[in-house]
Image (cartoon, rainbow, N blue to C red):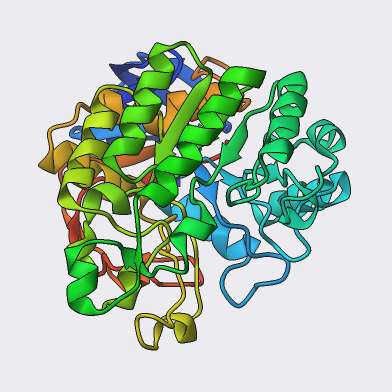
Length: 420
């Protein structure tokens, strides 16, 4: 293979300017050696790759991935996460602290960063807000921040308002966001799907939208009182979007994200008791799906993340009520998002890529470099036209728990250069 490659006619996304530019890029000796480069037909050892109808995107960030190593390696490992991310065109992932032991000390942050690096995964750890994620006593947030924690989350709500107030004050001093999973567990009351007429018809225990909106409403009041920055993930319903839209209009430092399942599917996906569609929060109504898409269009929703939550085969191969929550989504974050939003709902590609690149980079202060001469080559190529069906062999995650198998998708990663 040639030591030099030139990528021709690519629509290059600049996450710093938020714009596309049709550009040729020469890669030589693992670095960007030419921009706007026109290859000489007589030049030897130059491989030419035509990117017509393709996007060249440097830094897709998956801003919410469930960490299962150490403790739950039967679901996923850092090695399989790295393979899934590379296959899916994902530059880096923000990991939850939900391993066992959980990431609630600087030593665990160091351990995770080192082991992920050896696996070839750009992992940006989120440290726990409270010790053991139990919601009672603040964890060592300052020390974890120094060790490289990029944000803090308990991968769930902080039910004690006093603890939440302290967490906001402390995170404000560290200039790091709190990532809040907005679901009041008491109101959720062990529901297994969205509370609605359909849940009654199916005889399944429902989780009401108020379990989400009460959590968001309370935390917005605390944010107004203390200051700081809250990032809600995932938002799934119309009222949540409305609450956050109003809070932004008031000038509060609040951002939010959602996952593809909340704009690709609605609660009808579980009507045949399909355990692969069981997730937490649950899939909502068609009106909520419309509101989520509108929230992405108008910028209320800042980020789109996979909410990758792997499970074992046995977790899903049982009756719906007993089945585990979670959808494996890291491999297909980009194809699901582009197919649903760009192809089906005509959301501008610039809007979509801001949610996948620009916004998470800004919100979480992720260190990335621009595409510049002399810099290490770092980008992924996505096909905007070619449709492929999602099959199990396209999933590199150890878990295959997705309801989207056999669906035709566009936006697959076709080529990648990582760290040169």
